[in-house]
Amino acid sequence: MSRTVCFAKRNLLEVSRDALSYIFCVAFPLAMLAIMTLVNESIPKEAGMTVFRIDNLTGGVCIFGQTFVMLFTALSVSKDRSGSFLVRLFASPMKSRDFTNGYILPMLLVSLVQTALTETAGVIISLIVGYELSVPGLLLGLVLSVFSAVFFISLGLIFGTLFNQNAAPGLCSVIISLGSFLGAIWFDAEATGGVILKIAKCLPFIYCTRLMRSAVKLDFDEGFFVSLTVVVLCAGVFAFLSSLIFKTRMKADLQ
Image 1 (cartoon, rainbow, N blue to C red):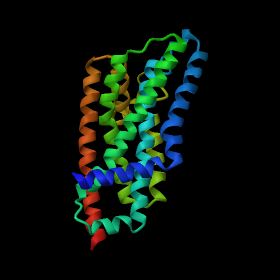
Image 2 (image 1 turned 180 degrees about the horizontal axis):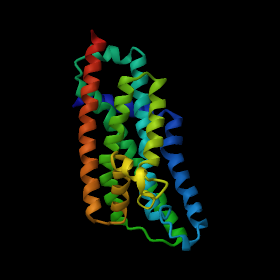
Image 3 (image 1 turned 90 degrees about the vertical axis):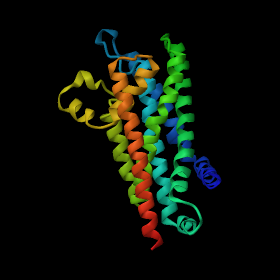
């Protein structure tokens, strides 16, 4: 445990020293929250479009922000692999789980802080636009965001393990685009229907968005529990896969 904590502290310091992490993991999601609120205010109420309403937007932007945490996880791992840092550590008594937990835990903390800041901004905006947000719902969303965060962080760990620091960010950008579009963050997938909705339901992104939005609104219908089940399973499966892939790559690098 002490090895994991020490490695996690080192990784957290690395992220905190990178100015881009503040831009993409904090400033950009908050900017999108403000911009899309302005877009919502310009949409006629007769249109009945609620995807940019602050209760839906806050949950969606929280998931959008987590995709950038995935990106920085991939960058951190691929950067360490490109140098001799991890090679030296591989010769130490550290186990593969010490490495994977050492990457996941600090990024999970970053994600929780990011979600808390986004929700706080959502509350401020809700007071301005006159739409009340549920504080218990926001707290529940913060707790449940752990599962989607672990899913995205594990994806970043997999990309960072399998690809170098030039390829990993590009692949993460693809996932960010897919997560935004097929996660139905910026449009109403249910209203769109058709092939797009069918494809979205085959991927975990839309369930992450649905879970956060339902939690924020304290909407515990059948869809909430379906989304919760899918996201928890994906978090567990991808966390296991990331650990397995990292362990396999670690053995290959030692040979």
